Amino acid sequence: MQHPSPWRRTTPAPPVRIAHLGLGAFHKAHQAWFTDRSNVGTAPEEAWGIASFTGRRPDAAQALAAQDGRYTVLTRGPEGDTAETVDAIVAAHDGADATAWRSHLADPRVAVVTLTVFRAIGRFGGQPVPIDWLAAMV
Image (cartoon, rainbow, N blue to C red):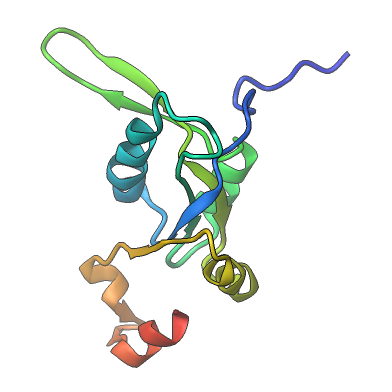
């Protein structure tokens, strides 16, 4: 008998309403966490889900996809540590998957497109990334 993974969703995932480029620790600890908090107490069909795309390598998307988009945020504090499971990321994709990116952008339910930009992502092969290249991604 196969037991369900504790990382699999037991309730329906919210619809994707946000497409995000730059799936990484900053996105997960901030935007996805706040989106998840805003979904608390909301019916699944009214909640907001995120389709997140990696910036440079597919590793983060592969790891998240294996966990059904769910992960834990650990907050350390003087009173002790707290762990919270975050469910807001409902689709994790390799940033090179242009078909998935366009599909999410074409979905009328997607209302917000976000991007995490750090200095390191603004250079490719030691050269600055032209803004037209970033615009072409949209």
